[in-house]
Image (cartoon, rainbow, N blue to C red; front, top):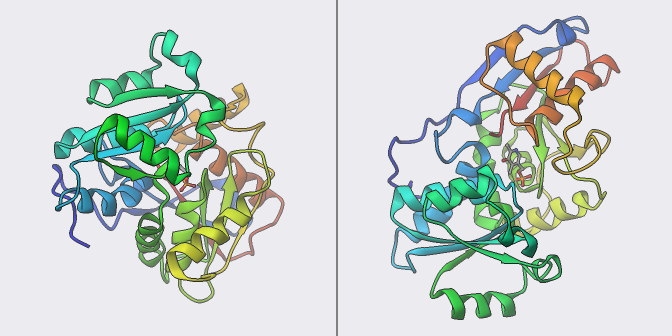
Length: 296
Ligand SMILES: *Cc1c(COP(=O)(O)O)cnc(C)c1O
């Protein structure tokens, strides 16, 4: 794949840092952080890994516009808008929630708008059709020729590109853990891991259908199941974007202990909390290495 020509150029492979954390060391477990949040300042973390192939395609002969889907706090919309600004591509964001059109924009959507994204608010029932080709055709009629990028950026090319994350971790860890929204990053990462390594996904949404989704994405991206992976569905803390005060405290404390920038609350805080709990429950073998992917 040709890399999209953005400035600054991405920092790849992303850094892999060991941190000393007694909540893991006590059980003989090493904790590493895979700093995907440092890949690019504007197109962060796994959003870079997922958007890169789309951006490379959009830089070619196709339409120089992207249309994609997201909720009101979508990191994917924000990354797509930033990529559009950096690469001179027109961007359209189809946002779940008609009622949002009447309110002042929240910080995420305000950032999207400032980066030039055209925001199109739709009802929750319309939003459910986000994967339907007939609706894409109508949206193209309305907004002009554009590349339609699936919600969360998790199309087959994106999933294949996330395998690189797994390959960067070969020989470096026993468990590679990642917070899951659509599950696309886990689907790709697991495919890139080496023998004896396993991927662990921590869904941040309630629902219990993610396993099926990850299998579907692997089928579409690779033609069948790849790698060893599992999900632990106990750590969504009430559901998507639910961040109880104790979780915020946990995240602030974790960042302070390890000299990290503020952690993403929707995904990364839940992942790190889950790993801390799992270590205490003895879920990781003594002498093993666990890597938390800091996805954004
Ligand atoms: C979007 C996002 C995820 C979820 O990625 P999926 O591939 O949709 O599972 C995880 N972490 C962060 C920080 C994100 O922005």
